[in-house]
Structures are given as C-alpha cells and as structure tokens.
Amino acid sequence: MHMKIHAARAVALALFSVSFLTAQPADDTQLKQVIVFGRHNVRSPTLPNSTLNTFSVQPFPVFSVPTGNLTANGAALETILGGYYRLWLTKEGLLTGNDAADAASVYFRANVIERTIASAQAFATGLLPAANVTVNYYGPTESDPLFDPVGAGVARLNQQMAIAAVTGRLGGNPQTLATAYAPELALTRSILLGYPASQTPPPAAPAGVVDVTAIPLDVAAPQHGEPVDLGGLEYLDAATDPFVMEYAEGLPAAEVGWGQLTVGGISQISRLTLLAFDLEYRTPYLDKVQSSNLASHLVRSMVQAATGNAITGALGNPSTKVILLIASDINVTGLAGLFHLDWILAGYQADFCAPGGALVFELRQSQSTGEYIVRASYVAQTLDQLRNRTALTLNAPPAIAPVFIPGCSVHNATFDCPLGKLVAVARQAIDPHSVDLMN
Image 1: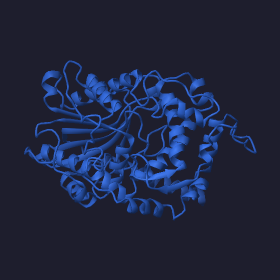
Image 2: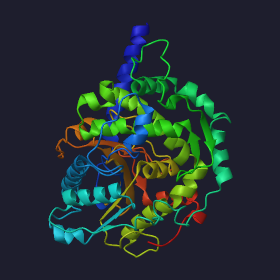
Image 3: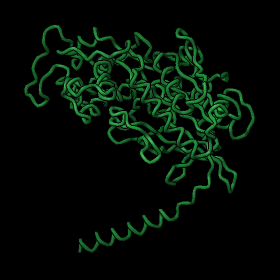
Image 4: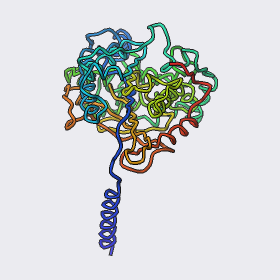
C-alpha cells in the first residue's frame, strides 16, 4: 500500500513539474540596461603578516603585493570575468562590438581603495578591450557616499542603537555564538595552531601565540571603521580571511592553510566571516543606515533608463547601458540585506560574496506589453575557476544563481520583478534620511 502511495505521488509530482515547466511564458524581454554591483577580485590579506603571524604557529604565506592590494592573478581573473560579460552583453544586443562607441554608454565607479579601482580597470579591459574606459572614484582620503554614506556625512549612525540592534539579535548574550559555531571554531583553531582537528583534548596554545578562538565575543563601540566591534569575531575574521585568498590566488596546496585545508574546509571556516558581516551589515537598523543611499541610486538609475528622463540621484545618464560598481563584500552584503536577497553557489556558503562576485540587475522590457521588469542574479567564478584561471565562455560560464526579490518577484524561473513594484519595495526598505540625491 505504501509503495502504491509513493508511486502515485511520484507520478503526480512529475505531471505537475511538466505542466509547470510548459506553463512558463516565453521570454520576450529585451535587455535595456545592466547594473553589476560586485566585490573586488583576489587580493592579499588586509592585515600585515607581522600581525597575522601572531595568530598562528607557522608564518602566513607572503603575497607579492602590498597589504590589501589586488594581485596580478586577481587582475587577470577580473579581466576574464569582464570578457565573459562582453560575450553575454553582445549576445543580448546591449553591446555592439564597437568598443569606442560602447564606451560612451557605460558608467564605471569604484570605492576609494586600490583593489576596487584596479578591479574595475581590469574588468574594463575584458569588457571593452579596445576602448579607454573612465573609472570614477573619490580620492584616497575621501569617503564615497555611495559606499560609505556614514563617513561621507550622508547618513548618521546612532552608536547606541547599533549596539542594541546587534546585541538584540543575539539574545543579549554574544557568547552563545561560541556554542552555535563550535565546529567552525574547532577547525579554525586546529589550522592556526597546527594539530589534527580530531585530536582530543585539543592542545594548549603555545606561548607567544594569540588563540583567536579564545577571545570573548562581544558587541561594543568600534575602534575602527566598522559599525560595531564584535570582539573576538573581528580577530577570527582577520585570521581566517587569508585562506580563501590563498586558494583563489593559486598558491601551492602546502601554503593553503599550511596544507591542512580542503575547499570544503575553507568554505566551512568562511561561516565565521559571514556571521560577522551578517551582524554588522544585515542587521535591519544598520542596513537602512549604511545601504539606503546605494539602493536609492541603483533604483533611480533603472527608472532613468526606463523613462529616458534624467533623474537626480541616478548614475550615468538616460542612455547609460552598463553600470559597473566595484566595492567590498561588506557593501554587497549590506545591499542584499536591505532587500532580503539570498543566493547560494556550489562550493560557497549561502550569501558568500566571492572574489569578483556580483549582484547583477538586468532592466528588461517586454516586447509584447512594453512593461519593464528587473531580473536579478548573483554571478561569481567558483573557487576552482579562480584558482585555475579558467577561461569563461557562454558555454562555460561562471556560477550563476537567479535571485528572488521578496515582495516583488513573480514565480517564474528567473524571478522577474516589475520595475514599478521594485520602486514600491525600495520605498519601503530605504531610509529617506540616509540618502542624498547627488551623483
């Protein structure tokens, strides 16, 4: 009897799946504009080795570029990525193949740090190799209001509210995270202190080595540029961040976590970084303050392209077809949090911002109804594509995940979102007091 019930369910499910797939309407949309909002590509660690080496029993590998800079591999990988977008956007008819002409309809902007500017320039080399593309950016001591609205004075952060908002998500006791993330902490400790993860009891930390897994987790006023200080979690992020870059940079296996880390281990440890970013940039109060200005500019840019009318607070002009914005993983995390966007790609944790990865927003118009829709996705090279500098083509693309926009997306395969509905969702999500209407 049970076998018959299971068989009947299987047949019903198969019939439903076929009818659902056949019911999907043909895509009659034409791409009108694309906004690529991404993270820089592979860089060296953001802390000097003199600091990193206090966290481990063995010295960290030495990268060939200054602290926090884009590596030569990172630039090459970003150019490969730009080349893929060239193929895709040419196929879609957004680019013509005449680079000089196409360059007039692109807007590139990067945050003020070297790795984001260099990434944008490398992307341009792949996208429009025969043209000189201007990358817009502020001076190194300035704050770009798009990516750092608090530093630029556009938004104001209430420090007490920030601490309360984050602490409240943790039930008032940040130390409970040590239990929730016990496997990640145990793996991290074994890698940094150089013993098998299965060893019990784990050995004591050697003299002179800072055991970052033992530093209490806390929520306090920040000492640096973060919205809050998360205590030991900040040190854990700093100590484990190099592992992703070591693998993606193509360092010998013996230098990736000192030969102790697989891709799966790297991915598991990255949950600690994701936790820190989630607390600092996806907490609703912090989201609204830190990401509203960027969100406002992006949505206004789409409306500007759809209407053909110049709009204050939009990027580029009404004829701009490609907008590329390069910043950091914290910026992508913040925007995703504001709109409750999620994704997952093979080999990465959910919502991980890969080197070179980007949220992509396609503004499309139905050829039958004239309606404008927005189609979102997350696009990134896999860790192995990064490590191997894999060539990308339309038949061998980077990893791509369609992204559902809550409150807006319809239930088709690509989660299309009517532009008018997106404007309404944005109006609810954005804090008007944290927005400027300047370019």
